[in-house]
Length: 563
Image 1 (cartoon, one colour):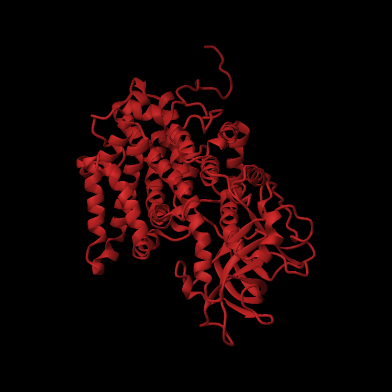
Image 2 (image 1 turned 45 degrees about the vertical axis):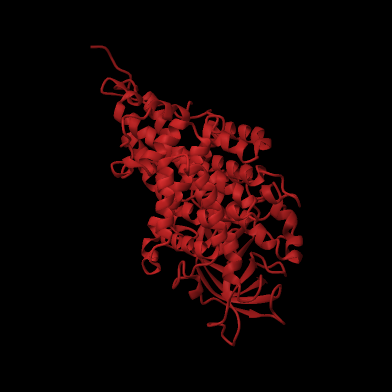
């Protein structure tokens, strides 16, 4: 009997190689077409370089490192001083440097007259990075969304503009007046007793002097979710008026990490949240102990002021969830192309082709939708564009974020047991999926917002539906779907609220069907419309992989990822 090599009992075979050095931009036909369509072709060279860099093995490793070595809160210095420092693994800072270099936080706001297509260009870049790692995008999402709010405060914005728009990441925890090259903005809205009901907030703000817009205040209270406490400033909500302010109007405040005298502002971090996913990013509970702040917007208009910021972050929730779908999809397809089961490659098994083709349809529909929404954010002065931005965005946040939950679970199942362990990316994608449904308003909040938007923007809705009818008139199923949607909106007001989820779902599916009918290959559009809105919808779409065999599964998969 011959001797064996110690520790080697078998040869490793039938394992898929890592998916790397594959350009995330050029292998995505739907994204490429949308970038051209939305006027962002001028950014294609940058996106193509980024798409290749993001799949380099060294860059892929950063995502794993940043999530395994989670942020640590250090409340005190070695001398016992209260510092509330947040320590991150170097991988986190490398990821943030990459994001800032690409202008993910600032691209549409960098010039007085934005370049046409800049919102779509930025959305595509965000989508690529979100396929790599989600947590690092959170503070830059909030920074991006804060800029149009701060621009309404010319004096304050003039002081912050250079650091807000900077393409450099400066991780130093120092005052903005101490030569810091860049800054990030976070948000603090929710409190223990309220959650999404921010009008129940009890944090109080007391003026130093006359107060009012642009005035200085002192804040006392707490925030139950204070996103990214290491940020250089936060936009927060607090009540003003009266001796206690407990029942006063809710206003918005700019609260810097350092007070004007250079000392650490009195925003005390109680603890970091131990979260299911998004673990590379720090979320916290804080108390305001006479913290310094500046009123943003008009007194008593705090919710509308900060909702303007939330509208942009909601778009990013849609993009982030679509990116998780895309990342999970290509991992599943790649695995199926290399794994053999029951005597054949997994990709050649008819039932697996059905699953992957169904996932490919869902992913492309999400991609065309978020890119269309990005274009609407750039042109929202037009009624139709305003409807896409104001009405479809919250519906898309509800639906796409919900679909990402089931989608990532299905893609994980393609990998089998290998998908369920933390040594691969699938478990992280799955843990990331729920956050976008919850953050910036849960599903029910989004659906109720859709109803409010329809009531407040009837002319915009009519303009959008008229444009949809021009497409739906040539497609029976789409025409019927649009009629169903209109009937749901004209139903009994007393029962409409209870049906808000159904209305939002019908709205998004119809929008996706219209977009695919306009811009996707006929086979893609037909498969999506028939199985999401047509006669086949009763037997499919409860689980993935139930498409009728009449559709060309191979063509759908190859279009999704020729890889």
